[in-house]
Length: 520
Image 1 (tube, rainbow, N blue to C red):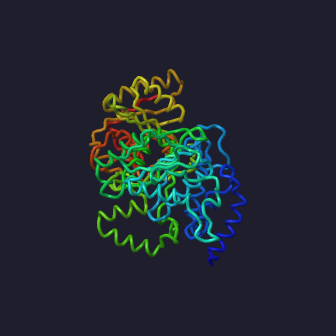
Image 2 (spheres, rainbow, N blue to C red):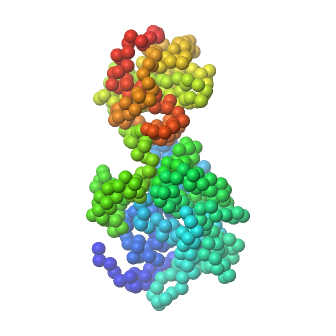
Image 3 (cartoon, rainbow, N blue to C red):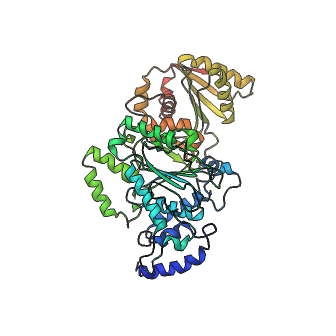
């Protein structure tokens, strides 16, 4: 693409934008146009730098409250998406945005320009930005402040005041890390990890990486320090904005499952608060780079070859360019199979269920309902709960009736056989549903050995609905984070899922000698 002279471009933009920006409160200038106007050599076009165009559009939609909360999007059979107009119900709006992108792709520069654009839109906004040390935090504050205060060096140079003439730095505010705009007491504060933000509240909180690299990512003590600071000192600095609620942007390279991103997403209640924008440097499926102008495929392949020579640098490569955490390699299940639409089952293809009852008060009961098609188990519903047997007996019976389950296998260990009899009685007497063939068996094989042995079958032959993370968040989190080595708090989800895998392979059919059918 032939570039026109930047001086000419800036002059054209200046004439256009001065006309549009009559004042800082009603300017209709989009965030992308703002970035493209002040840095046309960096924000080239939506075709040359598509990832930046996408990011700018997303940040504007986020600020304008046009992102639907994940659970609502699933309920309405929509993807987690940006909508044209702000939802009428405030609770439907997603106020937390997580950005995971490769290094040197313009994330920080875009967030700095976003801060400048926001202050032009509303000079009453208050932003607190956090980074992994004071130097980085100071740079964020300096570039934001200097960008607003920039004066012309050339006659045709376009500067911030041409676009937002009423937004100016308050005189006497000399600190880069804490300053205000004219007419305001406080607008911006940046701080490094461990720094204090006492007495200040933010309408917008921005985290721009709290973990520097692999040394910090593999240090459990440091990860805990990061979490405590983020969740305490930084996390409590909330102030309602003109939308009625504070907003948060977390821009992170995904280093560890124990980093703030990992911990937030592991909590099902927190997960629904976050819109996740994750982009890898290279897409293996389409054989395309995220942005060749920033990182060409040739350079990417050279970096990959170099980094993968050493196991430590290999972890750095996967974290930086593919957002794969350093502890992801130790997960038992590396991937899961998904479906968007169920196959067309034949009438005689019955719904089956495998149930692992809770052994103790801390264990989970896990019931998985599925249908078989072409040698694979398609999960249609799931029950995963820590409630006691006095409640789960009725829940399981209702689960069986709701999903029209015809064949149910229950582990008979630790009271499972008695549990099955009660469920059967509840089905026939309370629900008038006698159509489920139930059988129990005593599991004699080592649990861990079964789980590890059947892991490949679980990944290949058990197929989950595409929204299973939202539908069954506690089950999903347990499956996703389960480690090959080290201590796992629970293995009930894995035990039941392994049982489904054994049913897929027909292994349980060879246990007829110890299976006890509970005939209807």
